[in-house]
Image: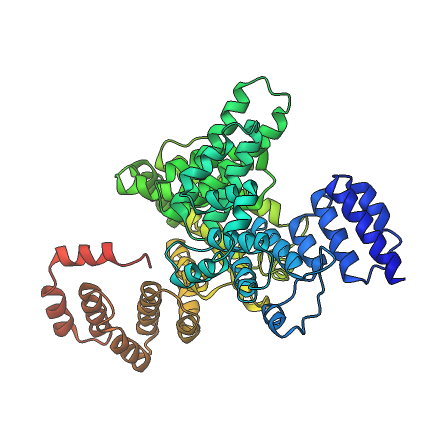
Length: 540
């Protein structure tokens, strides 16, 4: 039985080297599926055939933990994955390559480091590949890694001279990033292949925290796609889809660097042609549009929006506010004014919600479904918080109250679906919307029942906590609960801007009937300081 298995593995390997992948799978078909060598080889062949993505492949390979890799030193390692007949190092090396392709840079680095620690008896070709991958997967300037790679390459000179391909791989790995671009010279790569390669380099650089380098890679990948689009390439659909993916990656990179929002918006508008079914596209577009909106407000370009909101608030308080017009869920166009920017942001976020929430599904049910996967648990949290901010800015207070109410139910009933920072911010939005909608009694009840300690332990921003504490203090004053108001006001002294703290103290004195003390506090406070304090502190 063992001889037959060995013969089949040898035959499968010959087919694999000859790129006859289906024939290799056919040879392995009668082999026992619980044999680790057979399972590993099948997974590798399927990865090459693209019948499974890298994540599924990694799960099939059942990668060993780092501690089990280190036990190679004692010879007690029982391989769960083997690519060739002898030597587990090939299996682990290929696993690291798959991790790098999947963007798991840190995990691949751990595997390679553990492999390097026991690599003294490996073949020179294996040591060069381990050193090369470890160098590419590690931030430059790491002394520990430099020592490891130096030890790996200490006696491989003869092997490099005998294998030009190995020498070329090592030269490229140790060159600067500009050398990677010249790798295509004379290789006959198509523009699509070049764009795909540069995009993958950008993804790996971004995962390693090198956002500026990643931005360069994505820009060059976009240029390669444009060259292909101008040529008479029959695979136009592939190029168009790839261009959308590259544009999305470029936008995410720009947002992470804090770059100007206009570039990210333009890139995401390009990506929506092929990625309109992606939730994260609309979330990122909403984020980029909000950045542009803040820039427009800073440039005093929000006068029309301010006038529209003021008119709506007046009508709302007079009881004659019409229903707020709905934003159609369609492709977002290029906005030019602050009002158009905030409307486009609402449109993008509503598109994200329509993709997240199934038909006839409640938001709480959607949150419970998304919370089952760690990577999607907080997506709804981000979308609702940005949407509430946009609607508050537009003066659509009814929508803000509805969103905040749904969010509160989500926070209460679904564990892990919200984060402490957003919880406090949404509470601020809820209170402000209730006050603006002239529902003061409801706002006061909400403030009096608020658990500030929960927000503190959840890590909410200090400015948001101070705003909530100020509002709660005012609620205690209005309700006549003087001990609680005094206790809370003492906690706020020294934390708030001085003008806000003095006005709060004056309000407390006035509510208690101490008019002379309140008048003295207000008289000693310059009007300019009041205005400056209002500008510094968040909206309440």
